[in-house]
Every structure is written in C-alpha cells, then in structure tokens.
Amino acid sequence: MRDQPEELQLTEEQMAAFVGPNSAAYVKYLRKSKEKGRRKVGFIWGAFLAPPVWLAYRKLYFYLGVYVAVVAALVVFLPSSAAGAGTGISVAVAMTGKMLIMERAWKTCDKSYDMEMNEAQRLEYLARKGGVSWIAGGIVLFVFLSIFALALDALFAASQQGIRG
Image (cartoon, rainbow, N blue to C red; front, side):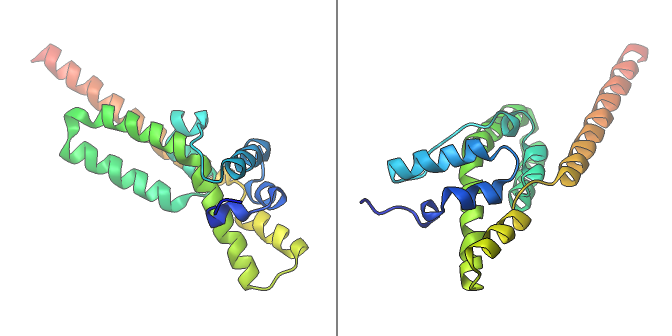
C-alpha cells in the first residue's frame, strides 16, 4: 500500500462523527482520498457562495480569520482588483474546504489518541469538537450583510451627491 498522509488514516465513522450534519459527502470524500492515497480537491457550493459564513458554520475559525485578513488587505491595497481576487479566494475555499475539514478532524482525532480515549469516548469527543455552529454562521452572516448594506448605502449617497453636484 502506498504511503498516505496521516489524515487519511481516519476511519469513516470518526469522520462522520466529526463532521456532523451532511457527513455523507465528507465520508465519501475521505473514501475517495484513501483510494487515491492522497488528498483530493473537491468543491463545496456553500463555501464558494458565502465563504466566511461557511467557514464560521463549519468552525474553521482560523481560516475565517485568514480569509477576513486577506480580503481586507485586498480592499485596502488593491481596491481595483479586489472583486476578481475575492472570487479567486472563494474558489480556493470551495476547492479546499473538504481538505480543511479532514485535516481538522484528523488533528482532533490524533489528540484524542494522546488523551488515551476508547473509541466510544473518541467519537463523542470528535462530535463535540467538530460539527457545526449555527450561531457562528448566523453572526458572520449578520456582520457581512450589515457591511454589504452599509456599502450600498454609501454608494447610494455618493450617487445622490453626483446628481446634485
């Protein structure tokens, strides 16, 4: 058997416990990655359409912070190309999302082995540490919709100034 990345040593049951809702797609991704002996690129529509909301919902807070920092830097330093670069970032999140979840599941599972848990305890630990956060997803959705509304308001105000001026 070919050498596989350590995260591919997860069992399907462990992956399902960690992922929580909609785990079937992630278990299938793990199975196909194991067959290939390497991580695969996948695509997640929710991660493409609303990357910050998806990252928060899936408890990928570190990557949410990276996403916000990169987008903010683009807006500040490259405002004319921020929209195109933002689309590229959305594609990257959508294509690597399953890998990010699998890596986080493996690290959490690995930690459970260090804590010398039995399999039942491990599955409960994975379910508790993984899963989704409707609250975090909702908060991020609210924040980004608020920013969008403020931007639209600013554009409308600027266009009214142009008409009057």
